[in-house]
Length: 203
Image (cartoon, rainbow, N blue to C red):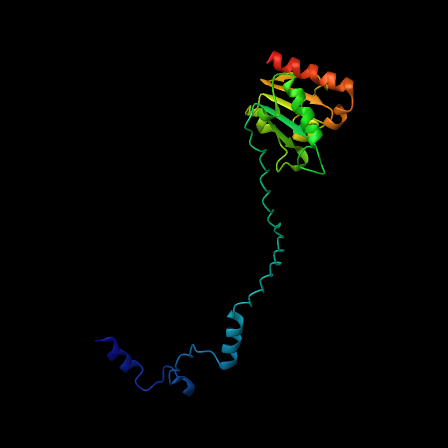
């Protein structure tokens, strides 16, 4: 005999269990969709925090650029030389020598075997370029005679005694007073003649 037949015989007219009326219908599962209020709360909860404002970087200070330095003009060259003898004078009021000074210089040079025709005579105050270092370094002259022009003004750092000729690196140097001073002084004339004679004889 089967189990179902046995239950029918034993409990044919008896109620074994009772289901309440509200349990007779299966309830549909609650929707996973939250209520609008809950949905708003959840949305608010998961909303990412507002981005913090990035600190603004301080504006970089303007760098003052130095004004371009104007190019330094190239120094003017010392005048070109044509002879072995260079004579410098300093006449601030006129470019050429006075006639009396020119005659005196020519006569004293002839007394030692030379003349102004074989010399470059330059007026220091009217030179376009007064730096004679190139003349010295390139040995553009053999005799350097100055009348009243210190060598320091020519950018030559040489220490010489007046009326004492001296050979430096193959060039003879002679310092003397201005021609106008020598012309009026007999002793200075003699000292100049002796110095020129010594310098040309030793060269």
